[in-house]
Length: 139
Image (cartoon, rainbow, N blue to C red; front, side):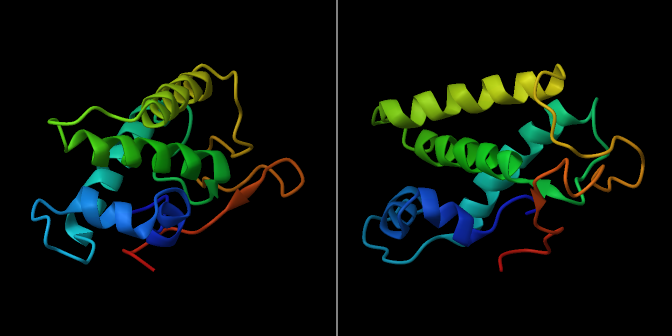
């Protein structure tokens, strides 16, 4: 995973909810990290699909908005694994907001303050609120 950590995901989704959403066996009491990682990777792929025409990917500096979008999309992906229940309105609205933000980034209406050259370095520290580093799995 490139744009969020498990800790960032847990700031939005409580650990117990992650346990419930990531396991098909209701008796499990630990998170299924593989399922969570797959949901996050799918969200990151969607983000990349929108950003690829504007930025060099993968991003070397992850803007906080990108991380927030990935978390909202991953949350939606995890809830969508449960087709027998309805998705909470807050999850659906967060997904719609994330998609609108991705479209705005793609269309240049929201700028991330990241250069668009091959280096992927921030334009300047004062112009960009970039944080994070490339990930090599959960931290």
